[in-house]
Amino acid sequence: MHSTTTEVRTETIGSALLITIDRPKARNAVDAAVAAGLSAALDQLEADPGLRVGVLTGAGGTFSAGMDLKAALAGESPDIPGRGFGGLTQAATTKPLIAAVEGWAMGGGFELALGCDLIVAADDARFGLPEVSRGLIAAGGGVIRLPKRIPHHLAMELLLTGEPVTGERAGRLGIANRVVPAGETVAAALQLAERIAQNAPLALAAVKELVRAADGASEDWAFAVQARHMAQLAASADVREGMTAFTERRSPVWQGR
Image (tube, rainbow, N blue to C red; front, side):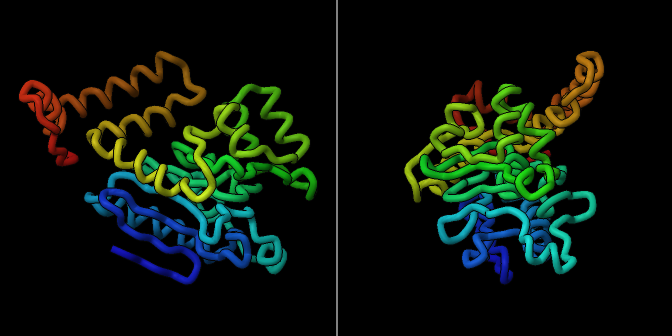
């Protein structure tokens, strides 16, 4: 299945939804139309029970140059209320998202990647948060998320200098899950998506929600939230199917209920 707008394309590949920002002449910079397109793509991913994982990438060998400054100066907002920059950085999705980063992931582009659950990077990709050089801060999640993902002093270096790092270094820092040769990120991300999709969708959703809920919370509170998820999972058809399939030495057939 394919879905196309001027700025964002989606394509169903197996149980994955490939979401492509399609403004290569603007280095896939995010304006209001891109934000609306990404928000709609996430809705498509969430609404289709046959889709298990989303893969986000950019057309033309660039992930995203971030906020479209010309559009912003003209009064356009790249934010979607309740969903943040690009309609993604604060969106509470239940299905895993993988960023497949080729070329530049700068500013808001880097923040879109940080808003995903996993990142596959080309070895020559560039990740950077240059907002301080423009009198701004990385307010789409960069300042908040990056220090939680990598050591404090390294995060502060990227945030305070605005200088980019390569995909190869991003892998060493722990920003990227996989580092692959240029041109191979989408294939690698789809392979990772296929592996994730072998697992129970209710359990995947529970992992995502619990990770969000536990962020900054006390352990007691986090365990209480976890107990609710475990009770729901224990009563699901999928957990019985998972156990039955294991005892019968076959692959489980998930129903998402």
